[in-house]
Image (cartoon, rainbow, N blue to C red; front, side, top):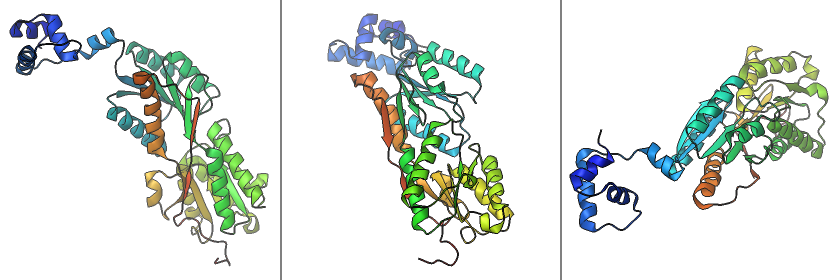
Length: 339
């Protein structure tokens, strides 16, 4: 493997001249620079990224700690962060901790050894204070996605309160009165905000949401399927006409539970999700949902960090992006009502 000394010897210049040609740090006569480039091409020399990082105290790399990547929403968010980093000349180092504390500690140590320039944290089944703990331990500029406020870190998320209210307003405007929701764990700030917005939206529409119409589940297909079964196994007069699920995977579980009981969606019960993952458009029936701007979430996470690293731009504390309604065919009208 060719070294910078090999290039200097072949081009009959000093090592510092080769370095200046590569990095553009000093004027070098055009004929000399051309000779150096010709030798570099002939020898196949590639500058050492590690050496350059040690010299400039930058590695052009951003770490990303993910507590779970199985949900398609999180997978899409990871992809959007990676694409945005690549477009700005940065590489992304991904670590999936699977909610294992030992893995979190080990991966953070690894990222520090790799001298990452910044960190993105994406927490799924969040423990209180976890995001702030990860941000503090990383000791680099940090953006936290879809989480609570995290100390000095920047938090970027959708406006879950507005999204919950939007879901409530849509179901109320469709004419539903017996509306239920399957929430995520309330320790997760997005779930708590989503529920608060949903309740506020129903209250504004003068639609009740009694405690019996609220089921809590983990953020999985299986958990939501069990919760939907509890709602549907009630006497007919107590069953919901429509069910709002706090993510699209939970909505898939709700659809499965309805199908297992011989119910037709949306004729017998309507189902609504949240996130608008790619799969939502291909569920049976296609899922009405609240769209989170995933590409923008990822792009903003990369942008605020790289703008800070490259240009000294200040890091914002909180950025909330606006969700929107996507109407498909899983929400209809109450029986006996057509408009």
